[in-house]
Image (cartoon, rainbow, N blue to C red; front, side):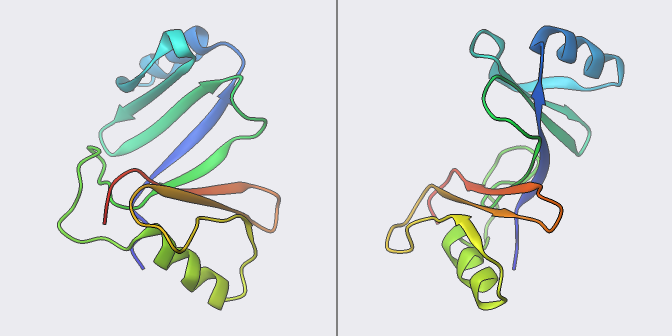
Length: 125
């Protein structure tokens, strides 16, 4: 099972302050729109998302179909196939992807400590 690129999506109080802080750690803006209160920042292969006012908790994020440069690899595991495999392993899906569709989709699971894990596919399989 290929989960795709990993990032941490952070719920931030002030996106400008957070952007400045992470720039001091060597991160650079990779994508996003600060006027919409979201940025994706990278430091080599480390990726974080800064999101102000969009969700309550920090979220572990996997993007099936993307590598660390947001490009589609030659092969990857579709998000619906990952969902099916996790269900078969007894993991409860909090928010499900429609398994009768194709292309972009997402689902969420919650780990034993209450941390949300988002599987978010942006590309066609």
